[in-house]
Image (tube, rainbow, N blue to C red):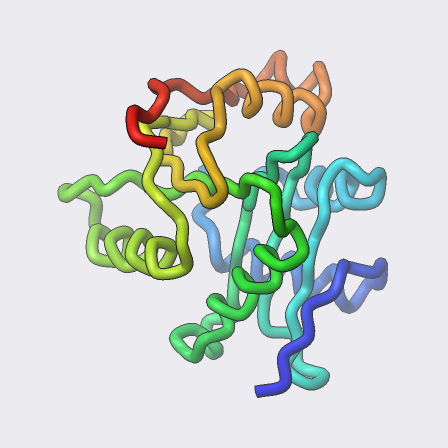
Amino acid sequence: MNITIKSFRSGKNMEKELKMLYNTAFPAEERAPFHMLMSRVKNGKAEMLTAFDGDEFIGFAYMVCHEDVVYLFYLAVKESKRGMGYGSLIIAGVKKKYHGKRIFLAREQLDKSAPNYSQRVSRREFYLRRGFKDQPLLIQEASVVYDVMSIGGYIHPDEYDSLIKSWSGKLIGMFVKMYMIGTEPVDE
C-alpha cells in the first residue's frame, strides 16, 4: 500500500471518478447535488481530499471547515477497496491535516428496524476505533436525521449552524432544513 492523500485538483477525469464513487457510496436522500459540492470546493468553502494507492484513485473525504470546527461531510472508499484499511488511512490523513481542530461527522442512526442495521453498527464501530466519540446530538439534513460523533471535543449546535450557513449560503438554507439539536455532554 502506497497511499497518498491530496487536495482535489480540477480535472474532468478525476471529477468523473469522484462523482461515480459519490453516487454509488451514498443513498440519494443523503446526497447533496454533486455540482454544488464541487462549486463549494472551487470557491474555498469546502475541501475535497482525494486518496490514491500509487496512481489508482481509491476514495475521498469531503470536509466543511469553519473556525476550529471541521465537518467530515462525506467519506467514501471504492467498493473493491473496502475492508483493506484505506478508510482508516484517509481518516488518519484528515486528523493529521486538521490537527488541533474539532472534527465531527453525521452518521446513520442505529435503528434496529433498518435493513442495513449491521452496516450501521459496523460504521459506528469503525469511527469509535479511530477515536471518534458519540455526542448527545442529532443533525437533520433535508429528510434524514443522523447521530453525531466527534473527535477533539463537543460541537455546539450554534457552531454547526454557523458552519452550514457559511457553506450553503442563504438560498439553500431557505429550501433545505439543516440543523443540529442536542444537549451539552456532562463529562467533557
